[in-house]
Each structure stands twice: as structure tokens, then as C-alpha cells.
Image (cartoon, rainbow, N blue to C red; front, side, top):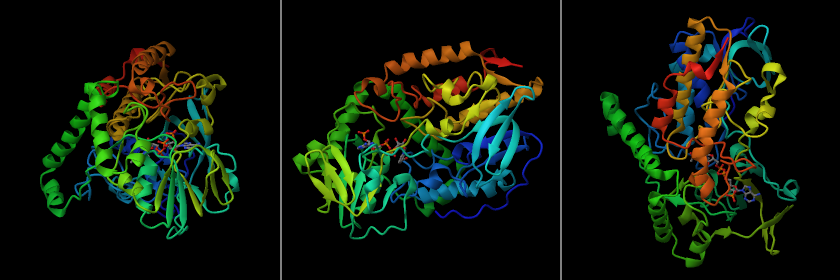
Length: 497
Ligand code: N01
């Protein structure tokens, strides 16, 4: 994906907007579309990249694809009949999101290549003063669609910056670097790495995969979806909805049956994953290195039919030792083994709290968001925060999913925010924010459920947790339960002024 210059930039607002949305990924685009459909025309989305798409614009690494079926990973009000595979690749998802701009006439409310640098709540005027690199803008309501998987986490490995060859993170893939015949190292074995490794293994001269913790991997069963089904889905939208419904309920059943706890289902899934490994890797020594030492579900469960076979290729080595240092010409292990490399890829994940922490958001009485989150990153129902009036987060704390499509969570949140906006209009409110007691109650309920979850009990560390071990990323229930809780805001949980 090339960054094209921004087009159709709307005139810069000189009077306060009704709604300003930060980020033009799934969340921001959904918010803008639904605002417009609800009759709120005075909405603008600012996006620092030159194109829409968010994570699907930036993550262009070879093999990038979604591990949720495409029909389920699309907005319910913007279906697409002709997804070409069960699991869509990054180019197709990026094109889908790009297509929403024309489909919903968003160009006039989209400011691309515009970075938000800070936002301050103006109590006297009851609005947000937002600074961008294009100038200031004011809005009565500020919505963050910045996402969590956004700022690359770079590993604290000694000597990293001394590496002489090309070195880049999966989320900033350098497509100018030729890989053919070269010695490539990949650090990490999460969702990004297991897609990159099989995609580049046939091309590179030698690939060394540095694994710290082996992932649980399940079969993927990806299939091409042909023109016949496309035609059927176009002629008979009900058929597409039935497929989406089946994909949804299959995943919901897993959560309802206890996928978020150590349960019988966990053991069954572990057996299925071990069978997958046994079928794909004949070498017992390699198999032993790939057996996870923690319970399935503790980290994100990965799906791939190509990852294990890629590791059995003669030009691929799995290194499970501890990395001592990166040197100018490769990676040295704690036992002294040295892997000479030409290119080093960091598939080391994301700093999940960085997005909002790096953009100073200052609420009532000078309260800085990063400081409000000092003890624990949290939000009332994952979307709003006491002390931050008229501020909403999409895919905020504890609203990610390990089992189903996050697009469904985003839609529930967008509708919740719209209900708040409608209430503000109907009751001529200047400001709305969660009551601290309601927020504390929500958090206590969340913590109680999380403490019994597989993510706390499964014996692993992951990006779901903060340094103190709190899971700050995932919703510990079904999507149905979340949607039910979000169907209509309970005004007793809010301070309305
Ligand atoms: O990142 P990760 P990711 N030395 O944090 C290792 C979504 N996503 O980009 O497990 C050595 O999962 C780390 O090791 P360990 C999805 O939600 C979705 O892969 O901590 N290794 C781990 O193996 C996903 O969960 C899709 O021991 C180091 C890896 O780096 C999320 O993004 C595709 C290290 C990081 O894994 C993040 O996935 C891609 C060090 N110092 C991403 N530091 C799809 O939809 C870290 N590691 C398919």
C-alpha cells in the first residue's frame, strides 16, 4: 500500500464541530458513517496516515490476513458479497475500508494526513479543544478510534540498533528490501510472525525464527470463495446473513461453553492443536520445541495451516534459546551460538496503551488521561471515563476479543455513543460523563470475572496484561452479553450536565 496524497480534504472547520473522530480505521469510519446516517452531518474524522484503513493500512507484511472470517469481519451495515476467501487478506480488507469512503460519501468529512497532537477539555465552553499538525479544531464530542494495536513494541534486546542490515517491525514492513536468497531473522511467534514466516520462507535463502514462547496453533481451513457464491450472496442477501450468523454463533458458543476459563473445552482444543502439530511436524525434537508450556487461550490462539510446515523446510531454523544480543551482523544467543543475518524482522507486537497515552488528552481539572490510568487502564463499559466529559473510546480498555469479531464490539460501542449524543440533544445537555461510582462498580465486576479467566490463570504473559498482571485488553464474556449491556445507556450511570 502506497501512501497517496490526501484528496478531497474538507475545508478546515472554524466553528466547533458536533463530533470529532480520531482515526479512520474500522472504528472511526463506522462512527462517521453512523453519525451521518443519524443526521449528524457536523462530524469530521482526522487520520494521520494518507489513507483510511487504520491497522489494515499499516500492516502490509507478507501474508497479512485476518483470522476472523471475512463475512463476519465486515460492518453489518456495509456488507460485501464477494469476499474472495474465507479469511480475507490485508489488501482485500484495506480495499473494503477504502471503498467505504465512496460508498458512504465520507470524503467531505475526512481529513487525511492530519495528526492529532493533543486535546484539552474546555470546561467553561463545554467542548474539546483539539490540536493537530494542521491547526486547532474544536468539537463538542471527541471520539477516539485510535485502536490498541498501533504503536510497535520494540524489544529491549542489547545491541538492537547496532544491526547493520535492514531492520523493521512487521507493522512497518519495508517492501523495498529484497529478501530473495538472503538470511532473514524473525523475532517473535505471535499472530503476525506465523503469517510472515510461511509467506517469506520459500523466497529467502535462510530463515531463523527466534521463539521465546511457542504459540497454540489450530487448523485454519481457508478456502477460496468463487463467483457462484458471490452471485448467490448478491441475489439472496439472506444466504450471506445465514453464513455470517453461523460463523458468529460458532464463536459465541465457544465463549459460552467456557473458552475464557480453564474448562473441558480448553482440554479438547489443546488435544486438537496437539494433533495438528503431530500431523504437520514429523520430527519429534522440533515438535517438542513447539509444545506450549501454558494453557490454550491464555495468549491469543493462532490459526494456520502453513506455519508448522514452513518450520520443516530445510532453509528454516527454529531457535528457542535466549537471545543475548543483536550484533552488527546477526543475533547471538546466551549459549554463544551466533546466527549471521542480512535482514532482521521484529514481529514483537504492540504497546497497547501507547495510542492514547502519547496523545495528551486532558480532561476536567487538568486531569491527564495517562495519569488517570496510572494504576490501571480502564473505562466505563470500555467507552467512557469519569473526569473526561463528552469523550468516548471505541475498542477501549477490555473490549477486545479472543474469540469473535471485534467489528461487532465496535458497532455496539458506536450505537452506544450515538444514544448518548441523542440524549444530549433531546435534553439540551452540555456534557455527559460516567459517574465515578458506576465506573468503579463496572470495573469491580470486570476484575471479578477476569480473575477467574484463562488469561490470568493460564500460566502465560501476553499483551493482554499490564505490568501488574491486570488484563486490560479483553472482554471476559460473549459478544451477546456485551451487546445486551450496551443496548441502551443507563442514565443513572452518568453525570449529565
Ligand atoms: O504480537 P504479539 P503480534 N525477545 O504480542 C515475542 C493482532 N493480530 O503482532 O510470547 C524475544 O502477539 C513474543 O514472545 P512471548 C492479534 O490480536 C491479528 O504477533 O512474549 N521475543 C511474541 O511471540 C494479535 O494477538 C492478526 O514470549 C519477544 C511476539 O514477540 C496482536 O495483533 C495478525 C521479545 C509478539 O507477539 C498482536 O500480534 C496479526 C523479546 N524481547 C496481529 N519481545 C490477524 O488477524 C516480544 N517477543 C491474523
